[in-house]
Length: 130
Image (tube, rainbow, N blue to C red):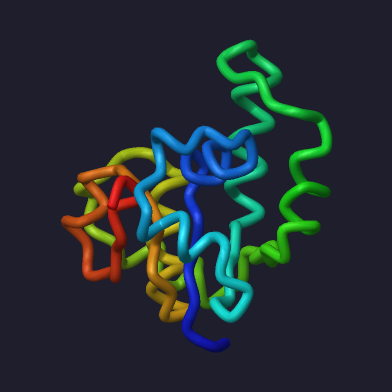
């Protein structure tokens, strides 16, 4: 897979809901650049759906379709991702974030996030506030 970016759940919501105050100029440029391959994990949609179903989040029902229209590719969970996941140290307890870290490692992607704990791992991270 070519080099690109993996967008975490917060950044995805901020981008799709046009919350520019939460996303930095560099991140906005990456999100808007059609030449940069952008991915969102199926695990991100799983996490967001769980949070929506228990009333912790609100977002449009067509978020997956909006993501597709923005030319962001949904990244499935592959065995290679799980093989990386099992080897990760437990600096971070959130299972969805851990899976994103493993996917970014396995696919050689830069992870767009504001989560400072992710920087503890051997993964390329771009602070989405930048």
